[in-house]
Length: 89
Image (cartoon, rainbow, N blue to C red; front, side, top):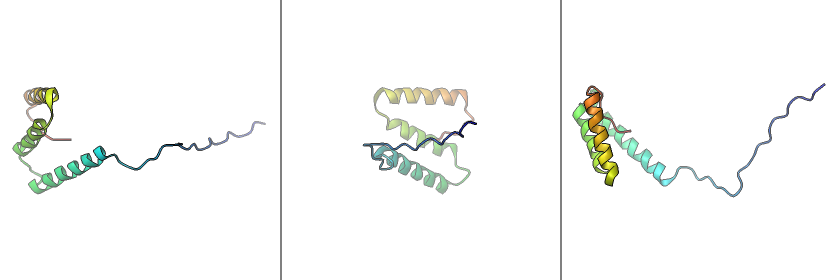
């Protein structure tokens, strides 16, 4: 008769401390919370222009060639699917 399989022993991470979220992750969470609060103030029937201005402001804050690529992507998406609502994620 075979012995039943034993559960794997738990392993521990040595020499690595986990302190929670990084500074970049915390900043992203704060920014997302601010965006949600702004959207709540605008109400459920927010105008597309509000979302459009938010997206354009985010694109303007992107440095260098990434901004050019973001502007081109935004233009392509607007031309291809004009009924989509602009959002920042």
